[in-house]
Image 1 (cartoon, rainbow, N blue to C red):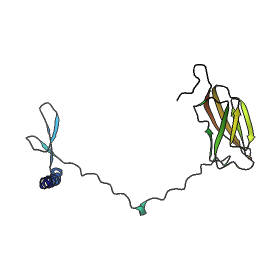
Image 2 (cartoon, one colour):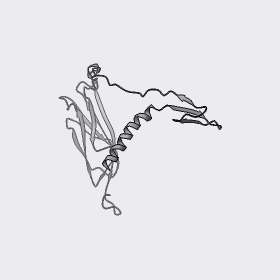
Image 3 (cartoon, rainbow, N blue to C red):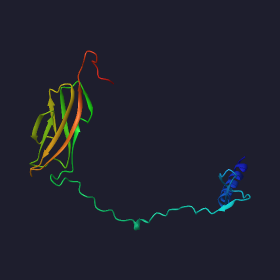
Image 4 (cartoon, rainbow, N blue to C red):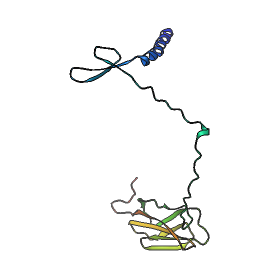
Length: 177
């Protein structure tokens, strides 16, 4: 059986080379349908197929040098990123009456710069803390934002982030799983 398998594979490999070398013919039947075949027939025209497309990657020496990355700093404040890290946008918080709000800031807060947090008109700050807690939060929809006040008088804002607070009810004493 191994000999038969070997001969089958040999025929397949050799046959593949022959199939690739066969010409292709095009002909049109009486209804106007176009047909392609590898067998010549009366009225068929031999079709010249283009060579297979190949790709030669450039050598590493020919690769262009990447341009230096443009600065992502905000020109007015010098910070690259200010985001509200928590709570997450559209999050639902269960059975809480205090909501911690934290920010992600790149680079870290510089000397002389402050943050002001605002949730539903309630303000905490200016402060140098990157995390604060709002207390006595009722159930419902809430919105939080933060403003970075740079010492040079410029500012940068993040948010608003919307989140929801759910409390226990008679019908739903436990949060969904």
